[in-house]
Length: 406
Image (cartoon, rainbow, N blue to C red; front, top):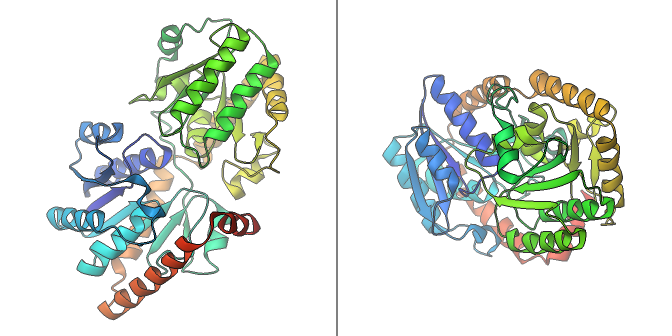
């Protein structure tokens, strides 16, 4: 099979890293794999990671926020994706996240008749998404929600390369030394795309929690970049000034973030990054939006297996609950060791890349067996265009209320 994998942007992020892991695994299984990516001017670090892995890479420049415009399709990206599929002589196109799903449907699928697989590792499935292509989501809640208005998705939880993401395979001490983290200090770690919609709020609460605890043993490192980087750096400077020490560090993005994961004592985060931290054997506090934070333990696991490794709070952004969760873990090394060992075992048993890749191969087989006639492709494209245009004109306040209700 000749496979084209599409990335909706090339900054470091859980979805992009998952896509690359899957692409390399498919190549190991004998498939011919190429990658397509969208960038805003300067290709992000994922571009170099793809090239370093030896995968062909096609690029198109376009604003990342294109999916917020009223017009549902952005012709430059759609044409670029179609050209890349032709050049690679692709049998199948697999794109990640819903902005690129539109471009893949309007381009390689509508124009060339190629089957498309879509993975959404975000926390919502838009109702205007094309209804019949194979869809992969990361939580059981999304499977059940999306099945009400389209063909039932496949659940493939964000995978972890448990061989590479292992504390015995990476030197975390060098990372600590570079940042000046002493052996008697506890490093709280976040590895994340720094963006305002889901990530910045939890990171800001983590900074506030550190300020509230005022424990000289605690340091917080936030690894990543993105549109919220300036806001987070400004807040970190305020916290550090108030505490009189460099308690919060933002070293930027790392091409290989594994040393940061290995260096942590306590992990904070959500989604795929949370699972990677658990693979390194760390206790985890899961962050979410609207004030959500919760320790990942055997007692709370059912929530995360159903809803994904994040959550929605009650809107109270007070840092007190998160500070208490950090305090309990920081005060008890035995508890940290027990939860860290449990975390590693859980990832090995449930979230390994091998098991996820086997399931993905089944999805590809189903997609390749489907042949949609031009009349159905055109009709579905018209439905998607109308539905997406209506959704774009909906006020953001109404959209948020509907999301909370669902």
